[in-house]
Image 1 (tube, rainbow, N blue to C red):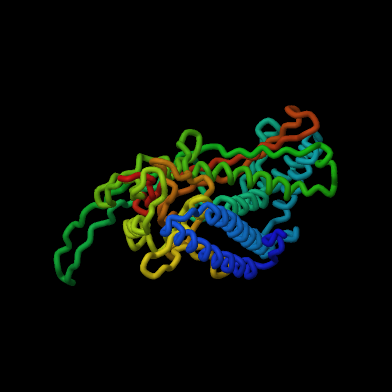
Image 2 (cartoon, one colour):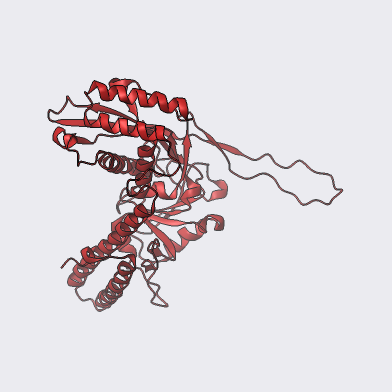
Length: 424
């Protein structure tokens, strides 16, 4: 029986994760005893691998229930007009969805143009339209829904600083050292303090494009929910592409990922170049660290101001490895399951964020990041999404190209630290 398929509530998932991890700890303790005795651990390793999959599945089930509860709690979840939406905005959305069902229908095209003009005339929204060649601007309600769902899917977007801008020529000035400071009396002479060092953060941009397609028959079906289909398809595709770029994008026609900046070094914050991350070597050439000291070094290489909001970012296989670490003196495990709805699993008491695009364990790889990503990484969205249709390329199907401009770059390189699989 698939236990995780029967989970109905977040509380039930949390309880099952706790029970499963208790069994996991017993099995891992038996594995450690076998290692000490020089006995084979093959069967215990296989059992732990199955337990890892089970805990991961329970964790995924918890996340799915939380997403459903969040969605149902939002205004407009049951299809009603959302508070604050104007009649013109609703009319434009309806016209665009009708056009999606029959993109070659000239009356529906004209209806989109008419709705656009009325919307621009009676609201502050700017909705550009150039017909079938350049596509149409997505209705604001659908754009917001895609953006919300992308946040749920993309882990780096959830934890980073996100700005909405009107141009790709966007830059931020970051104070690397802070302004000078002095104590003075009421009548003392004010001395000139040091000028702060300002560094420019200029995110690199790219066009994120999703290409959902539907059969002509489905679009003709009145029971086919075009809006939900478009939102779900576009959000999943865009979020997956963004997630990879925010981690390792090379900055060419895409964001610059936090692992794709200057080569990380061991140099401390006070003397390291701005924009370059610091790493801590794991001590082994091609495997994870064998002691907890490395993780403690990573934690305390981060300034206290960033530790308050710090999180581990890594992939599912590394999370499985983190479950096995225990403190030698107290015998306590450092990984812990979630304790409440919305709470993540933790390692050393710090939340764990699963990002499937983080590297696997390999020589010289950086499979684990730790830090305050709200401070450390910047994501920039250019306002506005567009949609273009194509019913020619694949006969019987209609493709829709949904696109947006998004950028990203390291914001504060002192706020993120890395684990490197290396001896030094």
